Every structure is written in C-alpha cells, then in structure tokens.
Image (cartoon, one colour):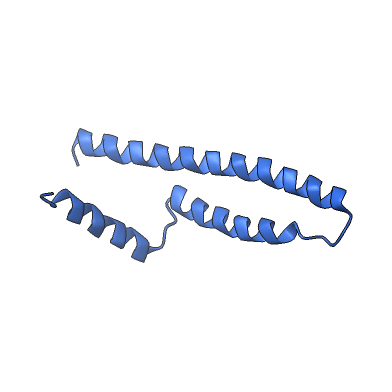
Length: 89
C-alpha cells in the first residue's frame, strides 16, 4: 500500500468519525428537546420510542465508524469501489 492509498484510507476513517460525532451531537440535542417536551406534556410517555429507534441507528453507526462493520457489508463496499473505479463513464 503506497502513501496515497494510506492517506485516502485515513481520510475516509476521519470522515466517518466526524460524521459519527455529528450524529451523536444531533442525537443528544434532539433527544433532550423531546424529553423536555415529553415531561412537559404530562400525558402518556412516548419519548422512549424515538430513543429506542434512533439508539439502534446510533449502534449501527458505531459499528461503521469504528470498524466493526459486518464482513458482508465490507465486502460489498470493496466490490462497489472496484466497480466504480473501473467504470468508464
């Protein structure tokens, strides 16, 4: 692997981490607002549903950002990269 490939791989990982941190920040802000609304509403509690759904999405994003991606997804990604690199369009 040459320096250019190492740089591109590192850049891709940094972009993935940056996207993850932005996702976490938005999650915390939005969920805080939803929790406040849920408490102020006084009715049946519902905030746990978006928390659960979005929490699962965060868990998936953790797997992608920190390299714990299932092998099948990683293999698909590599195939697509090769396909697009050799695409003449």
